Amino acid sequence: MSESRDAAASADFVQSLARGLAVIRAFDADHAELSLSDVARRAGIPRAAAGRFLRTLDSLGYVRSDGRLFALTPRVLELGFSYLSALSLPEIVQPHLEALSREVGESVSSAVLDGSDIVYIARVPTRRIMSVRITIGTRFPAYATSMGRVLLAALPDAAARAAVEASRPDHLTARTLTDVDELRAELDRVREQGWALVDGELEPGLRSIAAPVHGRGGQVVAAVNVSTSATRDTVEHLTLAHLPRLLAATAAIDRELALV
Image (tube, rainbow, N blue to C red; front, side, top):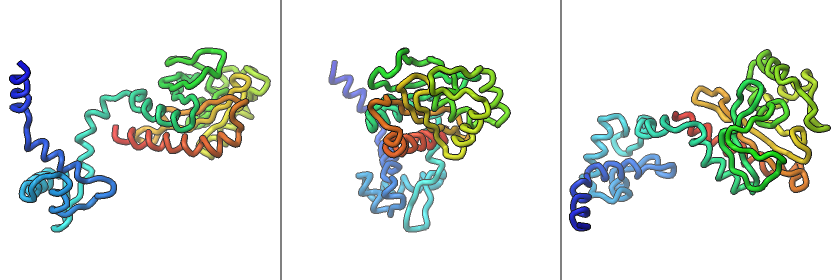
């Protein structure tokens, strides 16, 4: 029985397709341009076969050549577009959150704006740092959260003010900023610097820092934050140690979303 399955698998294997894909994979960031011999060596196929595949890819627009060196064209992105376009925003964001959480050793989340609230769409918790349990779909008032301020700052000024006023800012803690004009000034600062830090305004002892995520057209579609305890991390540590990693993660998400 197993021998027949192996034979069927062998019969279904298209070697020419496998070789063609190997030619495409021969190119990477460190080998953006390759000679015919280099392609054959890196793909592990005869030089003559590599030449046929390269000429075919050239005629289809996936490869360009100056007569000596070959390079991929942006059209190869089409090969992954169907996969990426089928992914939802949370599915794209989640692996980046997991990597960021491992780097900083803290809880990491992503949220979108829904009216005057943020709604969590992805999360990697490391420890319980809030009195309420945060799950996918949890909502908080945007004005008192780092992700909310990032998302509000991306709105036109009139829309941001309307969202803040609609939430009827209240003192959730002794530190909560509730004055609408002061909140507008804070949103201006967030818009200018490209990130937001909230210290104990949503819940006492909770500190978080957030940055925006941009869609294909450059619009802000979500936010990502790193949250921690005031007893464990200083504001300085958040901005000096966690912020660069956070910005690197959101930039990586932006690059992936640009293909969707």
